[in-house]
Length: 313
Image: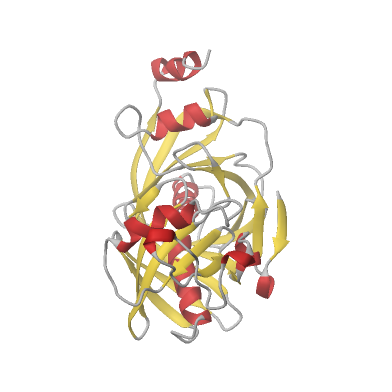
């Protein structure tokens, strides 16, 4: 993948390069971070991770179902190489919850211990740390998310799309002030003058696919509650409304500091699915910490993988 340096030096992945279709084994691990769940697969030859296959596997009524897929390319390589996919089949740069779920899987498999370790995803290296042994399958995992980037260049936003007050024209939905933030993937954070739950459903889908964003964007409606407590509602690129997101929590905390609404500190970011801890330094270095619950291990049946193959024959 090709990366540009955005304003303040934050990395923005302009586009995910076209790559060969990955293939995976049928065995999977399911975990969730505050209700945001991912399936972890390893490389194999049972099914193809093309758009049709991923959509079928992520379907909650006709497949195992999930908010996305993490593919571990090689368990013997260090850093651990990964690819990540949305339920619509699109590949994306990174997910804070997906990374932490992958860490829980690696710990469960005995591939990592109590020391920090690195994974490679979306052209970047991320340090993960499983903080102690799990209790009833509940892991506490931190991720060093790197330095947040700010401004249009950091997220592939046409700078001419924002007026001098950083407002983005959404037609009948008004012109909210948008704070572009990169956490290795693009985010657009809005701190509305009036808080209302339905605002994310109104502006989220419009901002997410706004033509001014080269590769689309994740969207957050956020506010500072008190002290070091923030609240966020999330519209995830390629997914829609989401109960919790690790990179969204990071983006909201970074935007709160960048906009002067908060000082660099450790924050509790509350989302519909629960809370994550985000630390933001004066240099915009971001650390994400929170729970991961293991849920299940399983395997796609031979019949289902045959269905996946035949559906595109």
